[in-house]
Amino acid sequence: MTDRLVIIGAGQAGFALAAKVRALKDTRPITLIGAEDVAPYQRPPLSKKYLLGEMAFDRLLFRAEHWYADNDVDLRLSTWAEQIKPDSKQVLLQDGSVLDYGTLALATGSTPRRLPAAIGGDLEGVYVARDKRDADLLADEMRPGRRVLIIGGGYIGLEAAAVARHRGLEVTVIEMADRILQRVAAKETADIMRVIHEAHDVVIREKTGLKHLIGKDGRVTGAALSDGSVIDIDFAVVGIGVAPNDQLAKEAGLEVANGIVVDEFARTSDPAIFAAGDCAALPWEGGRIRLESVQNAVDQAEAAAAVIAGGSQPYDPKPWFWSDQYDVKLQIAGFNLGYDETLLRPGAREGAHSVWYFREGRLIAVDAINDAKAYVTGKKLLESGTNPDKSILADPSADLKSLLG
Image (tube, rainbow, N blue to C red; front, side, top):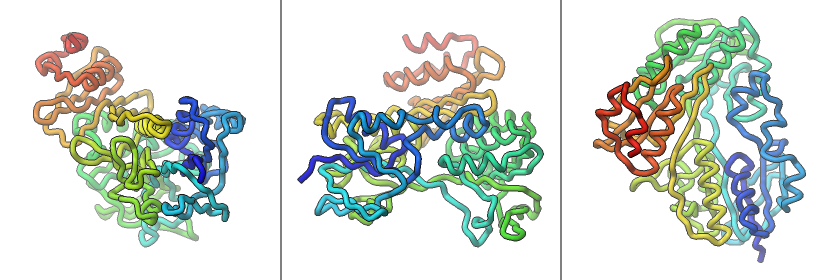
């Protein structure tokens, strides 16, 4: 028997869980398993400041490498879990080693969806943006004057477009839905972001899908689009969403439903196994959601760590997100699932806006575009459960602070 905590996944959630267990003075042995060959690091700057050459990779590391030895965290890199045996409480690794555990935590994250090989997804020059390797490959491609096709008009695609324009590329974004950001934001937010990108000479083609990529000698050279047009490109970036890495859990017999099903304590259907971050399907207002954000990865992992260390506090998600594009900061508080009403409010300075989301009259989220006051106010209202007076929101001359009472 062992009390060892084994954490599968060395991303944001995996590292946060290990660090929190140690911060809580829990001394059990910890093994942290990461498939990459580098110590755990922040991912959001990869596609922004790191890709732009404005931040060295060592600044992305969560901790210096000696932190792991100093804190009795056995960091296993360049390997991954191939099988979990819940009955014997063992994890079989790709390198052939076997780990016994007392408690297991799954922080396996998610994987970007890729294009099928049948439409050119296997051609050289077709990329996703997820880890350091992806960012390094993209950095080599992003040279002034080159032409990039970005497939998908969500946040990942639009952030890639902003970086590419900053580096002097010709950028075309295609979105098969009626508009960009259709799955994640209201029309008002999408309209604002579209204007910003078009002002930076990004070509945005909505209601336009990809028929297939065109290649020569195994490398992408063009794209045939659903409207019948063909465009020449030098490379492509695919931003069509992610899928939770829940196959390992499923094969181990854990309950899975678009993610690893957990309760309010981050426990899976096996009480000795926890899950946190992008891979976890957690309780939310009578249903289940996955929250793909740094905030949730950290907060849920730390909540799980507290339970592992002997606590009993349930995790109460307070979602927030952000997206940096050009000199625009989009900050999001809450989760707009199921909204049936929106209110657009101009900010106090030029270029500032906020979009307020309601469901059955109740505030559920706010998008703040270059409007920190609206973001902070909205976040406080959501955290306190206070419903704002819409007449004040609708009046751009009104002081948002009055909503806080």
